[in-house]
Picture 1: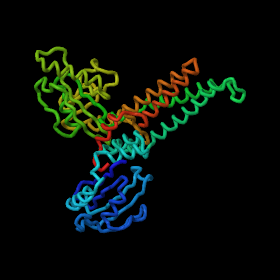
Picture 2: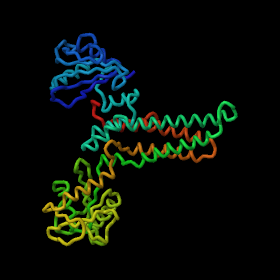
Picture 3: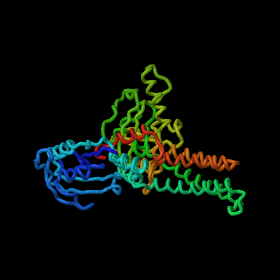
Picture 4: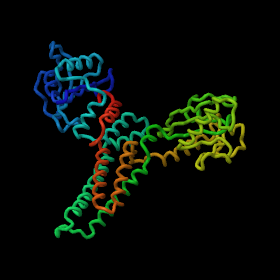
Length: 426
């Protein structure tokens, strides 16, 4: 049997209201002990005086709620105390709860973990909730909310249902191919056709943007020779002096990464060492090597060098410092006067929209992409198999891949890492 856990599930005190949540088999007894009354009607708020069962001291007057399991957020009996949000009140109520045998303070993410273990949510929804708690832009919030509300999980459930239908046909063809009451003609054709359709749907989903890019920001790398205005432009884009600006060539020795949000979109801007073929300074050469690595990983490149030296065909050619060098080729920008900056930001946002999920779309984490890729591999292997026995085995492996996607099969270590990132009240 699980311990009964409790924690403050609202914001840190002081606050107008402090919500203390209790979940587990002794939640009801704990609520009765603190109020000295019978449990309130399920899901109906009741004002009650909270008393320390050890001393009889009055702790607070609070709104109490009772949610009998399993139809609760955690799948267990659950109680809530809506207290005044002062530090002393919260501390006193939690101390009274901790004094009861079998009750303890929840670990980080333990309420959500119990919801997962009790089948109230699956692993994909947990990851969506984690992203929602960490969201800093509206775009991150929208994508995370879709994942947390189960949009991807429902799609995976549809895949599993389709797989079960295909598997049933394969088993029927294997076990009853000689029986008159199970039609064999055309069944393999139907299996292959449905496998094609399912594989195509999974493949389409894998083309969607990644959650890592949405969370960490679209990588924009500013590159070019020394002293062309990269650091000045980066400072203008992020709105602060993040990089040192100097007329001395080679001032930027290492790449400088600065996160910033523009137009509600998260970006990660990277200022790099000036690119040149040779330098007598070994530290500068290390910076140049790192600049080339940054270019290779960039989503968008702002090139401040010569047009003939564009590192990539899709790089945006910038004619920086046009306040003093007006004849350069490229998008005319002056970070000093602000000329062209709005146009540059619009270009960055247009590029970012092609790299990030659109309205109504969610984004997949690497774990989910790996799981979907594994599923796709088994679907293609099943489709290409000439022997129905091999097809049936690949279908079984495909179902296992779906169980790993939803968390029905997985490792405890991975779950520990995921839930450790949650706050205690979640």
